[in-house]
Image (cartoon, rainbow, N blue to C red; front, side, top):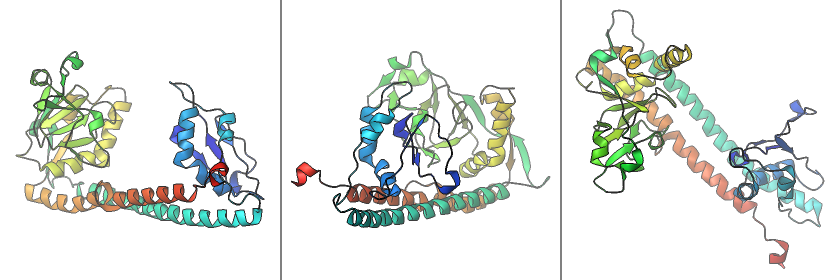
Length: 337
């Protein structure tokens, strides 16, 4: 079994199967070989995946910029061995606990596989429904049907951060979630004076990151202010349904277009001029609503935090972690005595 000793709290570990038997591991890994007459390889695996081990690693790693833990300290971690004076009984207990944990793991894997299939299905239908034959719909440059602007940051921003309840929500990358198309709360607020030096948006407007995770769209579910790491899209409701626009901006065609522009070196970020030049297909609003009805069902199933498969996976993962830590908890000898 391998455990990555660099950035160890990321919990990168794996059980090596026969296909890779005899291969060489880099010095960035700690290698475990189970004494199979005493302990099962998966018994070690599940103990290394536990919160107890992760807490131990966090306490014993060193280095701030590039944290790591030594092999010596990893090997010093103590795992429980049930019935140590009766190896046969010990392996029976380990086998049964591993069987139970494998069952939880397999269920989570099945759900994750199903989620992956649903995402592919959503992506397929989204791209099909948003592909139009020539002359089938009108295409317009984004700048013709919406106001596209870059955000602005008041300087120094610390001067304008406030805890006053009347402050204006200050929207940052950390306020967005990959599981939601909405921004509905922020960790910080800025003063009205600071907001005036920024870019103030209203509920229903769009924001796009123009640097990190560039091009990912979010719909504002609140009024707020954005800094210069965002681009804003507003005043489009006459021509575009906001949910239709969300699905279109999320499509592979648009995301690949942003990537091609950035990778070409012609631009260094997703600037307002580039967004304004993007061509948008504009079917009648009633057709946009029909497309949204179909795609929202797939989107809710695959991306929603509170419903659908992601929620089920989250619950199963918590259930697995609870039983893993419970089943791997044994009283220490002095406590038992």
